[in-house]
Structure formats: C-alpha cells, structure tokens
Amino acid sequence: MANQQPATRPANPRFSSGPCAKPPTFDLTKLADAPLGRSHRAAVGKDKLKAAIEGTREVLGIPADYKIGIVPASDTGAMEMAMWSLLGARGVEMLAWESFGSGWITDVVKQLKLDAVAKTADYGEIVDLASVDFANDVVFTWNGTTSGVRVPNGDWIPADREGLTLCDATSAAFAQDLPWEKLDVTTFSWQKVLGGEAAHGMLILSPRAVERLESYTPAWPLPKIFRLTKGGKLIDGIFSGATINTPSMLAVEDYLFALDWARSVGGLEGLQNRANANTKAVADFVELHDWIDFLAKDPATLSNTSVCLKFTDDRIKDGAAFAKAVAKRLEAENIALDIGAYRDAPAGLRIWCGGTVETSDIEAMLPWLEWAFEAEIAAQG
Image (cartoon, rainbow, N blue to C red):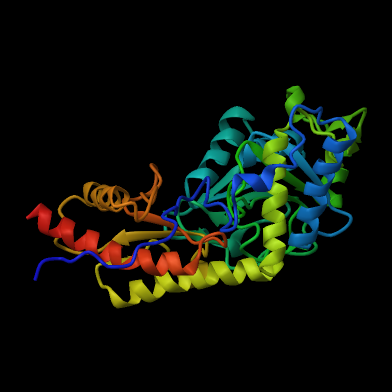
C-alpha cells in the first residue's frame, strides 16, 4: 500500500526553536496599546518597561532583592554584558555541551583572554557536574537549545559557593525550574519560551552579583552598551526601566501580552505543564518507532523545550541529507516549519515543545513525520 498522507494537519505548523511560536491567542490587535512614536523615557514608556520587569519577576518567582534589567541584543547581549562586566575577579570554569555554550568559551578565552578551565561534552551528553569547582566563577547554559540537553536540577550548585554562577537560561526560563538562590546571573530572551519578539534580552542579578559589580573593575575597557556601573555603583535605572539604549515599544507591548497570556494558562506551573505535555507526546512517538531517538542520551537531562531528535535507521545512506529532506517535505506540506537541526549540531530534527505550542499540534504533526520518513526512505532507493 502506498504511503498515505495523514488526514489531520496541525492548526499551527510553527515549531521553530527561535524565534518561537507566538502564544495561541496572539493577533496584532493585541498590540494596539503600544505607545508608538513616543519616547521610552516618557512616563508611558517607563511604565510599560517597569511592567515588563515586574511581570517577569511575578511569573518566574524571582526574589524581591534580585535586579532585573532589559538590555540590548537578546540573550547574547545579556550574556556578553555579564561576562565582560563580572569575569576576571577569580578563576573561571566554562561548561559547554552544545554550540552556544561553546561560543561563550570562545569569548572568554579568545576575547577576554582569561585562563579559564573549559569542560565540554559531546552533543547529547552533559559534563560531569560533580567535578565543578565553585571556588571559581562558573558559566553554563541551563538548557542546551541546540542539543536538547539540560541540567537536571540545581542540586549540583552549592549554596555556600565562593564564585558566581552565570547561567544562560534562554530556552529554560518559563518552562523549567530555575533555583534562583543558586543563580547569580541569569539571562534569557523574549523570543524563546514566551514567543516574544527578538532583539531584547533580560539580565537578572543576585545581590552577590551586584556586590561583585560594585567592588570589581575589569582590566579591559567596556563599551557603553555593556556598562552596568557608574562611579563604582550599580546604575539602578537599568533595572527599573531606564534602558541603556532605545527599546522597541512594540516589542515591549508584545512581551506584556505574552506575560498576560502566561498568567491565563496558570503562570509558571501552567507553562511547564504545557511544555511537559508536548514533550511527552514526542516521547510516546519515539517509544513506538525504532527509526528515531532523542539526541539526549540520559532521560534525566532531556529538554522539554528544544527537543532534538536523530534518525537511527540503518537504511539511511547520508544522515545529514536525509534529515534535511524530511524537514523539507514537512515544510512543503506546511506541516512543520523550521525543524531542521541547528547548523553546528548533529544531523537530525529539532522540535520546539515550549508552552506556546499546542499539544494537539504536536500530535497532529507526528504522523506526518512518519509519512515523511517513509517517503524519503522510498525515494533514496
């Protein structure tokens, strides 16, 4: 019998891992209250920016004594700002198990030229967290967006650590439990789990991180866009809505909408439940099909947002070409858009399972994945 196309299609074929799907209730009219053409320094602009900061604190449960700032250049900008401003006061350990963590190693070793200890693991694996020396500052990604591997929890981080923890949490925030008492610097971007618009990053500082900023001056010059202190004191306005550079008030309005939507589905717990349900749908599919598997080798480290898959069928002659061909078939049918593996990652697929994705769409897409797989096996002869 010919390989038949499934009857049901996803209502939303957007499974990109960034920018990610908008919340299901999104439409452009929801942004009508954006103060366009107004100064972000006007009262209306400041109020919107402060609402974005305090809404973040509320939904994520960030402690009252932590500072939250909106900074330029997405999660990358936030992480660069943190590393350039804070590192160098003591030893540094860099942990990486995917491409973005590897990028932070490059910046610290080759740009800042610090004699950092780099601990790395292959895609699908994670470093030995028990070996980390917290007398040093430690830089790591909570969730490997390009590998589908996350740290299982924060138990490996001691409460009495001497160094700071700098955590890139861009595909973890709003989907996974972040133990704030273990994190001194946390960064993420709006375009990930909440499906916001790009170009803005969030920088969250513990009191320990603020103390470091006010007591340590890096040996290298800092561009204006990275400066968090003036005269040895934190520039507090950054953390109350007075941004370093001009923000997009349209993007801010979109983020405020996304935060409201997050509250409507049960806040952080509701978002986590949605992501977990999406990931379970994929896991159930993987369990039933022996030609596909997770890139993550340990179920305890499996991401519930950026779910990375690999093809394991012996009939596949060229893994990279095969994966691209499957993704192309699904895109041509408008079933799943932008699900190819990240360019630096092993060949395969990457399905975004964050809370803005409906489980019904995941469930409708998966039979099409089987159809595309069988069609491509037949096509390669």
